Structure formats: structure tokens, C-alpha cells
Length: 125
Length: 369
Image (cartoon, rainbow over all chains, first blue to last red; front, side, top):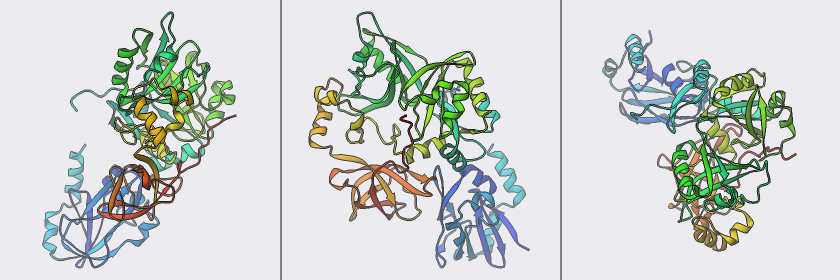
């Protein structure tokens, strides 16, 4: 079963085996507004937990996306180049950003589960 | 912040419409409504959009006996105001002694008065500035509680004509009084989108009803400040505090067209010596349009380079929804300011190739009759 975890920076990671798919949450896309460009990392890039590795541009502003875990990027979502609006329309599905091979699955325990994330979002007003 | 944010007469309406409200120039203003900025932008380009710009500063200037308000205000702006016929409107700037821009504004002559519209963030300082210099010659009446609605887009005219039929034949940059719903309004055919449209100055307590009446028309939807910014950027229009400020002159900003022909030679406004010298010899830098390659967006503050040397800075940049691509404007050294010049825009440390291009990015659609 895929297990979805969430960061305080509003990224989600869904892990199957040792590969995690990463995107931004519904809350994040609502805050950003219309997404017009996503700069995703190249496959093969090694990223450290907390490292800025993607950029999402809305009409209003550019925002960094941080790697929620350490690992190697295995694939980026090429479809976002022509359809960045998928980040708004389907942030947890077609709007995924990139996949990462986790170096240490133990890092996942530092992330929130869905209930904890929802509670966290509530504290943000 | 600490201070309480001010509200426009449309605050309740914005809440009702589900607007996302943000602090802007001391006001709680709608940045977008639930449909989002892209939809609001397209709505304004294809049909009609209603903007609340009541936060802007409306001020009425009336000559004291034996004086001339147009002549008086010309001591503070380089625009040709004495040449305004009743019902004509002009864009100009309040300049400082260095030729820098304190604010940019619209001035309309009603025949009896001059109506000025200042930027929200500058309006208190502008008012003090005008009072300091013009109190002896003019009555200066701030009308900061009035409403100001902008109805913009290709269908704005047909919509507004249902409430005030004579607006249909008004030309760009003219104004007149109308009674809408029993309220005395002053309407100008102008705006900040590069498209056709109107600005409607309303009595405070009539603003909400008139806005609702306009929104009830099938062509009209509410538009927030987010789309207002992307629309004006496509039109190549300056945003005060970003593309123009006290450190930029009207000549550097490419606003020579707004300076009256006689005023260019005769001067008589703050900073005239600096501005006249730049007209004669060229300004050291120029505001230019920039078209970056690819999809990366160069935003305000991005450096503009040629062969790795910094030649300027982006002052506004973003996604142009009508074009489906990024655009920007900024200042570059004059020697690099020709259209077609290849430059790089530094976005997150990486050079993005771009070309200097004429503005507007999207063709104007003003109604000139």
C-alpha cells in the first residue's frame, strides 16, 4: 500500500517500495493560485532533505519546493511543461512534480500523516 | 502592521463574492475571487471585468477667485493641463526637484474643477504636497471616501450604456457627469488594462448598489488586484513604486509622450532642468520591454546582463496570460536599450536569454471614436 506523508512546507510524498512521488497539497495550490510554470529537477539529481529542488510559478509569485526526503530524482513530471494547471486541478494526482529514490526511509517518520497535516493546516487559519 | 486596515465601500460585497482579501496600501483589498487570476484576466480581455479601485485617492481642485487651477497644478506636474478642454483627461506625474516621480496620476477637467486620481499608497503624501504648494491659489478637497469602480473590457461600453446611454460615444481619455440610480457619478473612459473601459467615481453610499447593478449584467464578473497587475503589465503600463519612483525620471521611464510640447521647452515644473537635459541629450537609462525565451519568469529585481555584465534590472515581470508566456519590463543603460538587443535575465542564478522589444506586449484597444 502506498503511504502518503506531508511536510510543513505543504509537500506530499507517496511512497511505493523505495520510490516516493512528490507534489504539493490542495492547501498549497489554493494559496498559490493559478500555476503557470513548474521548474522540476532533472532525473539523476541528488537532493538532500529540505533542499530547494523545484520552483512553482503562479501568476503572482515564484515559490520553492523543498525535497521532503533525501534521495535521487528518478523522474520529473514532463506533462507539467504544457499543462502546469494540473497542479491546481489535481495536485495530489496528475499535478505531481517528481519522483525520488529514498536514501533513508527512516526520514518519513519525521513527516506528518494525513490527520496530522490536516490539523496543522487548521492552525494556519 | 498593527494599524487597522481600511475598507472600501465594497468590502462586504468582496466578502460575499468569496474574494481573497490581502493588505494593499493600507486597505483590505481583493487580490482574486474564487475563479482565479487567469480566468479573471481572460474575462477582462474578452468580456467585461469590474474592479474596485476605491482605495485610490480622488482629490478635487478648484481655483480660488482670481486664480487658475490648471496653471497652479502645472507648477507640480510636467503635463499640459492648461490645454485641457472641459471633459478631457490627461495622464501626468508629480515630479520632485531631481526630476524623479513622486506619483503618477490622472487629471480631468470638468470645466469648473480639476479631478485628480492618485495612487493609494501615495495619496496622503500627494495631498500634503499639493496643499503645501497650492493652498494659496486653490481649494483642495480630498474625496477619499468616494467609491471608484473600473469597468474594463471590450463589452464594458455596451454594459455601462444600459445604465448611462451616453457613455457609448465617449472617447478615450474624456469624462462627464452621469446620474446612475439617482447618484451623481463622474465617468471617464480610461483604465489600467490597455483595453477599452471606464472608471466610475461614485458617492460612497451609492458604490455598493452600482457595483451590484453592474455585476448583475451577464457580461460582467468581479476582478481582483492580481489580474489588474497582469493586465497592466501586458499593456506595458507603469506600476508606481515598481517601474517608476522618486529615482526614475519620466524620460527614463519612456513617458515623454505625457509631457506637453510647450512644457518641454518652457519648463516650470519640479525637476524641469534635469528632465529638459534628458530630453535634449538622452537619459542615462531607459525603461524597456523584455521578452524572455522559454517559460521561466523573470520577476522584479532580476538582473539584466550582457556578456555577464549587469546593465540593468527588471522592475516588473510575470506571466502574460493573453500571450501564454512570460514578459517583463525593466531599466537598462541607454547604449543597450535598442529594440532587438539580446540580453540575459538572471533568474535564480541562471541566465535566461531575452530580447528587448517594444511595448505594449498586447495591442491597446482604446476607443477613439
